[in-house]
Length: 252
Image (tube, rainbow, N blue to C red; front, side):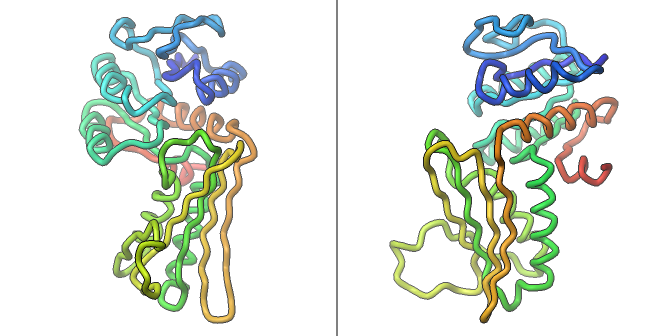
C-alpha cells in the first residue's frame, strides 16, 4: 500500500487529487498540508509540515509557491519523494528543487497532464521540420482566477521548442509597445484570462500560405490529478534525482 501525503489538500486541485487517490486500491492518504486545516476527508491536516514528524512513501504538492521551502525541508528531512505540481515557481525556487533532488527523488512538471506533455513532444518534432520557414506562436487560455502569466505550461512548451532548435529563439510576450515587424528569432507567447477556462494551449506554426496548429484543451482538473497520481506511483523506489513527465511518458 502506497502511503500518500497531499499538500494543498483543501484547495481546488487538492480536493481532486484526494478524490482520485482515494479510488486507488494500492494507495492510502495518510495526511495533508494546508493553511485551512478543516478535516473534510478523514485524514489529518497540518498547516505546518514540521508538525508531522513521520514521512510517507510519496507526497503530492498542489499548494502555493510560498510553501515550497517548507515542503522541500519536510521531504528531505523525512526522505519522502515529492511530486511538485505547484505552478508559478521562480527560477530560484526551481534551483531549490534541483538541490533537494540530491537527497530525495523530486518530480517536477509545469503541467501534470499526459496529453500536454505529448503536445510538447509533437511540437518538438514539428519544430525540427518547420522552424526555418515557419513563425512559431503560443497561445494559452485560463480562468480569471489564475495569477501567473504566461502559464508555466506555455513556458514549458516554448522551452521544449527551443531545445529542438539549432539556435535558440527569444520569447516575446507583448508587442503593443514596440512598433516593428516580427523577426525570425522570436517565439510569441500570449495569455488570455477569462471565465472558468480550465486550460487551453495552442502552438501555431505559421508559414507562407499554410498554418499548422497543435492544440490541447483541458476539460476538467481531473486530468492533472490523474497525472500526479501516476507520477506518484512512478516515483516509488526511484533514486534521488530530478524527474519530469517526459520520464514518465517514456515508460508508458
